[in-house]
Image: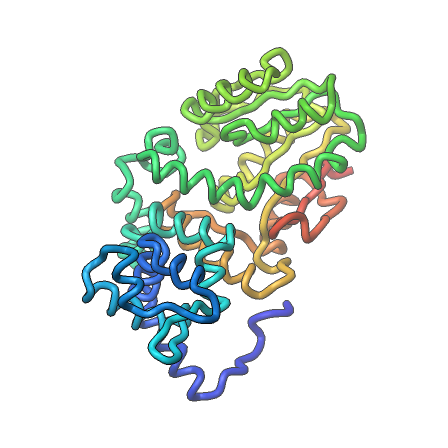
Length: 356
C-alpha cells in the first residue's frame, strides 16, 4: 500500500494538526458560512489588491461583528490572507469557492451527514445508523431517498452522480465489448446508466432493478429520454434474501451499489447475480476502492465516506479495500478476470465471470 505506512510530520506539525482536528466542526461551518454568505466570492473578486472588512461589510449588508469573526477565522483556517488590512483569497479558499468536487463534498456533509455525525460513537457501538434519525424514520437511507427534503435530495444525488457519472462514458466500451443483448442494472437510481447504454447501443435491452421510489424517478427520466421501449423496470428490495433477480441476462451492472451493503449482504447479492446470469454472462462492478487510489486525498475522502455509511446510510457498509471485496466476489462463485483502475475521479472496474 503506497499510503499510510509512515508518519512524516514533526512533533510541532503533529500538535498543530491535532488542534485542527479538535476544531474541525467549527472550521467546516465557518468555511461554509464564508462561502454561502458570499464573502469568499467578494474577496476573490478583489484579486491581489484585496478588500477591506469595511468594503465586505458594505457589499454584504451583514453585521460588523459577524463579518469580523468570519474574516479572522478565514485567516486561521487558511482560506484568506491579510496585508495592509486588506483580505485576499488563498488557493485553498479558491477551491472551496470554485472547485466542483469540493462543493459537492461540502454540501453532502452539511445536508446529509453533519447533524447525524454526533451519534457516530453510538452507531459503532450499536451497529445501527443512529444518525439517520436526523433525516427521517427509515431503517436505511435508501428507503428514504425519494422522501428527503429537496435540498437534502439534491446534495445526495449530486454527490452520488459526481463520482460515478463521469466514469460511465469510459466504461461503456468495456461493457459492450462482447455485444451484450440484455443488461440488468441493479441499483439504477435515476436511470442515468441505463439511458447511456440505450444511447450507446441501439438494440440493447436494459432492465433497472431497484426500490419503488428510485424506480419512479428512473421511469420519468427514461420516458423523457425516449427509451421506454428498451428500458424496463423490476421492483425489488435486494436486502430480502429470499428475493430473486430476473434471469437470462448477458451482463449484470452495478455502479457504486455493493458498497451500500455489508460483507454478508454482498455475497448474498452476488450469489443471486450468479443465478440470474447466462452461462457465459459477465458481471461488471464499478467501485471506488480506497487502496487503489492514485492520490492520498482520494483515499482519505473514501475512508471518511465509509463513516457516512456507518452512521447515516445503513450501519454496516463502507468504501471497501479491494482485497476484501475481491474475496467476497470469489466467495459468491465468481472470479475477477480484469481490474481497470483510475476510471474517472476515483473508480475501478471489476470484470467478473463465473468460475470455470
